[in-house]
Image (tube, rainbow, N blue to C red; front, side, top):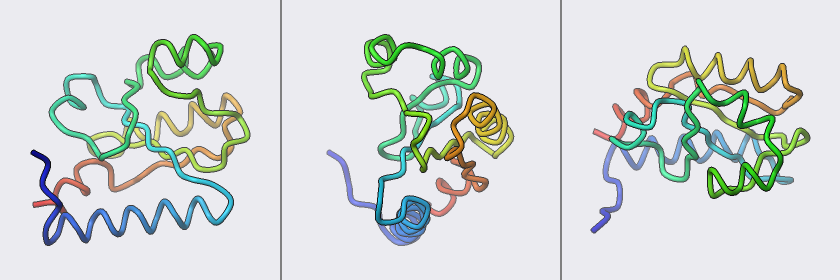
Length: 124
């Protein structure tokens, strides 16, 4: 059974929610992308994040929407999406993913600099 976050975890979730709402504004919703390995993400991730390892991100973002949907069971982000937030364990791969997405034309790509480590520390 899932438990509701308590204490610091609840505060961390609130900060992340506020940050994503701020980035998303009134016009849209932020999407979270966990760019760590499948094994890392399987051990725990931020709720609602889609795991696409950084090693396959470039090919994933270049796929046809139907192929992306079939492989990741999620809608492919659009170039015009304003609020795509990438994160990893400590920040390096998240930044790399953000830069890659921007180079492919995803101008709304952002890096969650605190990364999963910050989120997890706040959860404890």
